[in-house]
Length: 263
View (cartoon, one colour):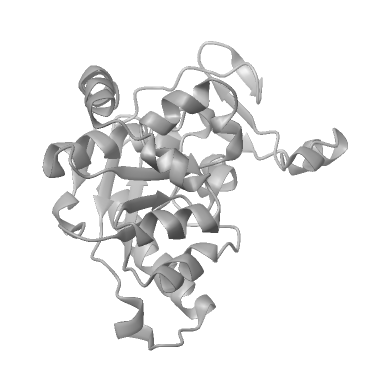
């Protein structure tokens, strides 16, 4: 399945989407992407980022235009996404944009082909983190991304973002509510509760429009796992190092911000 999804990537279609949506995203969120040149110029790599903004997460819409402006459209950026994003006719559009289902097999196959792969280890858990912990790197104990990089023999490239968690007020992930509604059997562990515009209180639905918060993303230096941790690295040790590097960067970006939303 991963091979079929990857082969569906359409550079011309991707360029059209980026050219049409890119200016709107930059204008609404006043985006700034730093350090894009730190992504290896050639060869595969696993890009590891924190996830923000809830249902309307703008992470890929912020990063992808900067990536393609720098590297052009001869090199795909594959994003790993929850299977729910790839259900029905929407999957055809997502696959043409380089989105593939998030599982280790797909990631390794894509990396083995020489591609760049973007992963958000924290997934929905991270994207719906409460406003009180907006500037905390938390992958919910998920370390599979490290195993994927080790298996594929590729560097990890950490990426941090700040601002999207200010697009609305996130109150709770709603773990208890998800269990009460027995949604966990559908791989839905959260029913997030937030307050935003124009609907006010939202319990997953209706989705509010993201406030125009300034979003800054920063690409950090690649991490060579074998060089730094040896031929048989401890996965938990690597994960702790990656998160600590990302947390230091996020702390620095947080210090730069003067006001919520305004940046």
